[in-house]
Each structure stands twice: as C-alpha cells, then as structure tokens.
Image 1 (cartoon, rainbow, N blue to C red):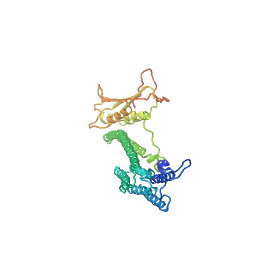
Image 2 (image 1 turned 135 degrees about the vertical axis):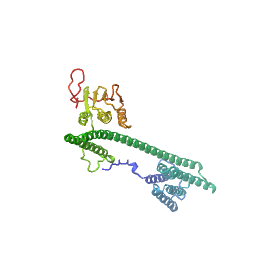
Image 3 (image 1 turned 90 degrees about the vertical axis):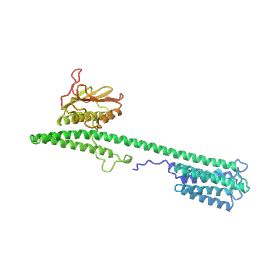
Length: 426
C-alpha cells in the first residue's frame, strides 16, 4: 500500500487544464453576451462584423491553438506559455469589434499568472506580470495611435485583475515556503531530540556494563594464579555482561530501524520482538549484578509499590543505574545504598555511598548532566553533591501525575509497623 496520501480531486487537475477551462468559460460568456437571451430586448453587446464569418471563426480557431500550446508549456516554460496566452487573448479580441481586450478573454492569462507566481521564483512571476501589463498597454496605445477608439478605463480594470491574480499567487508561494521552513525546523528539532535520547540511553547502558566488566576483569587478573576458580567465575561474569551489553545495543538500534518511512515495516523485521524498557522492577537485578562484581548494593523500598508511567519508571531506573555506575568507577567504596520512595504525588530516588571519591570521575563526563536532563524533562528536582558525613549523594524527585490511575500494587517487602522495612543486602 502506498504511503503517500491521496491528493484531493481538485488538486489532481493540472494547471494547464484550469487555464484551458478559464479560456473556454470566457468564450462561452462572450457568445452569451452577443445573443439575445430570453427576457431581453436585445443582446447586451452587439456582435462584430467578423464574428460569425469564416475569417472570424478562423481567428478564434487560431487563438485557441495558441492557448492550448501555452497550456502545455505552462509547467515547463512559464514565460513562453504566458507569451502564447497573451497572443491568444489579443488575437481572439479582433473579431469581437471591441476597443480593448475584454476580461473574458483575459481570464486564462490571470489564472496563468496565479500559477506562475505560486510555483515559480519571484523573478519569473514578475516577468510574467510585466509581460501581461505591457501587452495591455501596447494594445490600447496602438489603437489610440491609429486614431481608433480605445477602451482605456476598461483596460485599467483588466490590468488590475492581473495584478490581483499575481499577488494571490505570490501569497500562496510565500505561504508554502513558510510551511516548508516550519516542517524543516520541526524535523531538525525532532532529530536533535532523538539523537540526544539515543546518546543518553547508550551512555547509561554502556557505562554501567563497562564499569562492571572492568571491575570483574581486574579481580580476575589479581587472583588468576592463586584462585583459578574465582578468576574463572569473574571472567564468566565479564562474558555475561558483555553479551548483555551487546544485546542491549542491538535491541536499541533495532528499535530505531523498526519503523520504516511512512510507518511501513522493513522486510525481514516483522517478527523481531523487542524487550520492554527497563523499569523500577529491574533495580533488584541491577543490584545483584553490581554486588556480584564486588560493590554491595543495598536496596530500600518505601511506600506502596505500584506501576507508574513507563517514561517515569525508565528515567528512575536510568538514574539509579548511572549513580551505581559512578559508585563502581569513582567512589572507591565497597557498598552503597539505593532508596526508592513511593509518594502520593512524587517518586523519590536517593543513592548514597561512603566512598572517598567525588562522584564525578577524573575527567568531566556526561553522567550527572544526563541525569539532570532526565529529571528536567519530567519537571522534577535533582541534586548531586558530596554528603555531609563523607561520600556522595544523588537525589531525584520525579512528580507523579495526579490523574494517573493507581493499579494493582506490586508485591513488595512486608510492612512492620510505621517504619519502612529495608531489604537485606543483595
């Protein structure tokens, strides 16, 4: 099925067909004004001497041929098409016995001016307008020079219609360019936002896994000769972490390619399932993996655990993941604490450690910046600073939408009195 929207019926008609229709409508109007219609004493305009003679009919036939040529050239050679239409209008006026080019014979030119101004550059549209006005001036001036009657006032009105048609077309042209600029800017903003999102997700996934891999590899190197079994277990953990990281990157890139242009699915990818995004329920898995790598993570849950919005849970998990990664890489400590508090109006995530590091690493990174951006996107509050008693503390408060329905609570650790229960170290 085609991804392009179907054009409306009137949009499918080419410009040349509209110009030809205007020409024939003008000819029909000219003939109706030169016959006595029912209820009239006489025709509104007396017919010219040549109108019904063979030479008058031949003139109309030649002018129609010029017009059809101009209609065929309109989209490819607009200035040449305008010249043909002007010649047809002037030629068709001769057998009518009038003193000016009537508006009925100029309707096709007006419509061509509109299409030229709407679809072509400013220079082309201006040249077409100048050609039209010059032909009207030359027609009236030549009659006046020959001493014949000239309908100057009527020709001014016809010139005014040409200017109005050009202005309307120019307005359409500028409106289309403005809409195209808006679409381009919106597309650029969407691309930048998507790139930032991808960079943030890849940073969170890779930084944590690489930190665990480095820690396990260092432990294996220290005990490879004295404790081969422990070294083998550490390298197995390195292999597992590497495979999980590679799988996560593949899923992320696969998600970006999952939808093709126009919403079509690329061939061969219809059956590729994607793992759901991480949530707060994955914090326990994260704590187990980090504890197995040598840094104990104590997880404490407060409040009634319940499902929240997916983007809220994903952001909270990424904040915990990045904070734990910073503890592993920079805190120089063997343990840290993660506290997740479910409130009625906000979710609070607090990560603290008692290490000697600063939490920022030896060189500036993007971890804290990424966490701050995540919290800002959710209109929350973020704080990251050394703790008063030593160590480092990261706190994020994410507002929970009030209108969000409370679904079935996730089973959590049993409550013992009013104090929150802290889970055992993982």
